[in-house]
Image 1: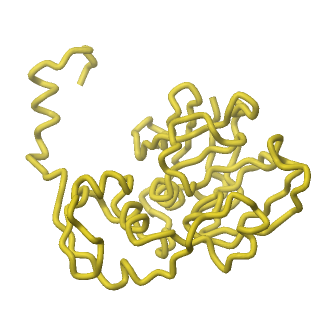
Image 2: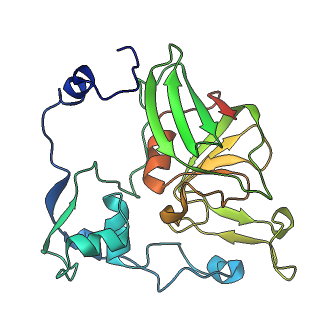
Image 3: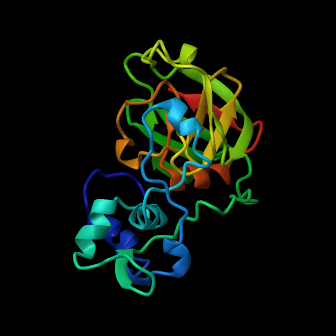
Length: 246
């Protein structure tokens, strides 16, 4: 369709061709959803975080919120009387559930794709060579102190459930008393559930333990996505995939 900039009849008809689909659906909480293990809280101190066996979710509602790509506050608002226990039927967004334990398998249909990250839009697009859009996601891409470096790079690695190697020398806001630390894997790891490395030292595309911050320029230069979007992106790229920062 030729772009008109107006919501004309042809546009509305094209948008409605898929028929009506629910935005919310019922879901029965399973024993696996609430069994954990959970951690009491995510330590702000990297040394304390490094002593934990894993950076797991802090509660069943946080786990369920990520599973259904929503904020915990939204789930509570949709289910004001819910206790979020096994066997309880709740209302959730009608999305493909995210499983933080299921390693993404490369999508064979993702051939000849490239990734473009726009700092101005705080958005990431995966497109085919002919320009067809494959995937779109909001991102956080750098900050005033650590701006996104424009240029063209390539994916060098895709790591599922990575450990985070904290080096205070690389962070301008690190406590000078901090020591280097290795943070175990988990959805609340500082880089979330996926690390996509680039041929640009210290930079990558990754998940985050704080999905509510996506869309704001709050990172230390890397490109952050929600864990569920990072997992989807990991299935679309591979070593050699072009990544453009602009």
